[in-house]
Length: 386
Ligand SMILES: Cc1ncc(COP(=O)(O)O)c(C=O)c1O
Image (cartoon, rainbow, N blue to C red; front, side):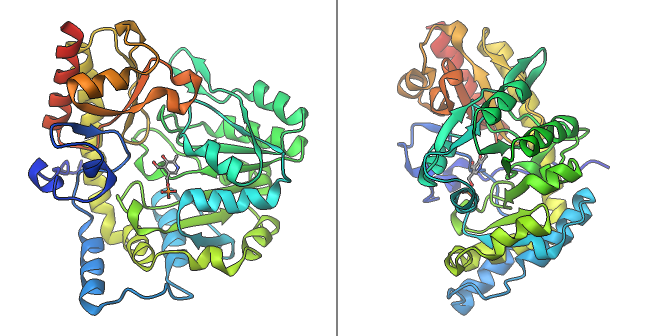
């Protein structure tokens, strides 16, 4: 039986929130930009955090906050992935985990491959690790995008040291196939490179799609790979600060074990509590309801764009709540979100921030009420007709 779609909070309550999504722009703007969701938290998370607040349980994160055990059980239950607990570590957020791993596998000036269009902080994060970004854009296929294996092979053969993978991919919503991940691992191994896989959107993979954690794609992938993930995106916990780092093998785990204590110490206590509750079986029903809502919205967006914004090109994502929409045909320039913000009062993410491949594009966050999505697209449609 399919789950009942989750209902979003009403707009007047959302406007009481103090997060970036609701404070960045004035109230006449509909915010569909940053990746925050408009739903109440999973009940188990709310209860745990409420009790912690009542107790003033706001101190330092304990040495064993339960994140490791909760994640291992979750991976087994939800995807049949057997994670060796000794390979699991935690830190404050996904990008911090990525930067700390990269710092230890690159020397200053080494090149790290990204696949634009991609989550913009990948660039800063690589630079923060002292490395240099090498762009190997995702390849277009007839029906979407895929890893440009030949391009990555050339970059690694030419000396690039690591690949920062986004799986599922933000902003295209691509879930990479096991075969392409295994092939990427083979290429990395052949050139002595490491793959760091950001899997923050993985819990939001829609059926019948199958998500493959990178390190499970093959033995070679386990040998060359790290995964960094969190419940923060799929359970809306970004402000609480907790992420999980997983090594593919005993050898890889040494790097994580040897990280300075501070890397773990920066984990927020609310983040740890919330991740433990998110990964608990009691939160599965909430996730199913969320997925039911997001599944409806990703399809609704296709219908709305067809009706109101002819010329918009949108491929329904296979994971996540971010839609990558090509508005080139509207003739609104490289960064159409600027005009949409100014004149339609809808805040979308700027396509060019994801790389030059994002020129003419916008990213739309559809983790909201269907009425909000409809209103946003109608406003854009009205602008297109004006
Ligand atoms: C691919 C990807 N990685 C990382 C993040 C941010 O995660 P964190 O706040 O845990 O660093 C996001 C946020 O949207 C994301 O889309």
